[in-house]
Amino acid sequence: MADIESLFAFAPWLSDPGISLSALLERRASPMRGRAGADADLRGLSLVTAGQAAVRASVASTADELAAATSLVESRYAWRGYAVTPYAGVAGATLVATRGATAVGTVTLRVDGPAGLAADEGYRQAIDAIRRAGRQVCELTRLAIEADAPWQPTLGALIGLAYLVGRAVHDVTDVFVEVNPRHERFYERMFGFVAAAGRRICPRVEAPAVLLRLELERLDLRLRNLGLFAPVGGQSVALAA
Image 1 (cartoon, helix red, strand yellow):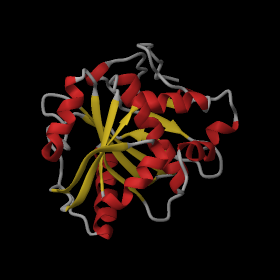
Image 2: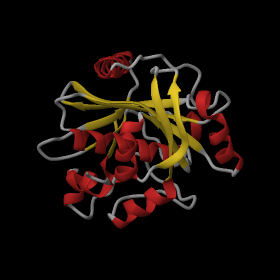
Image 3: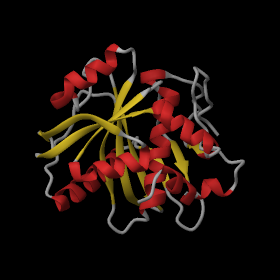
């Protein structure tokens, strides 16, 4: 099974070792530079892969983009037999991957705040233990990729943009995901997630789930070894082209 090295190696930005993830960021709105925190205006921020299977991952900022993300999640979750419950009261950014005018993938990055994370509903004790250690947590939720989409560049663009938003804007140190147990090995091998809490029924999709955690310092190291950009050590990063 593929891991993050082969995922990003497939993405054409690695065809030129002088190109970093940050160099692929584009802005369609006014520039934003440096870490801006939870109130950052991310509208128009996007990351674009090159090549024949070009995919653009953008932070959704319009009603149409958010509707496209919701429709994709609903259709893919329904195909798997999952329920879809809307989230409310949690800060975050919905990312949408497109090819041309068609939405082919989406994921939502939800950062910690007064309302907590959606995963707190079933795993508050495990997540609180990480918070008490002084870590800044977030979660990835509602990942969906169209059945006939080129999954590697689509997933690569979404994860690349989510990583940069989480690291450079929100100073995230740890990412949590709730996944079906049958997908656990994929997340472990692909990204380096480790088990954080055991199997339970996720009330939002009415299906079994386990909680996984990724320490982004580990991902930073892997990306640095690949020659990709990794914001660490309190260094700011320009998020404008």
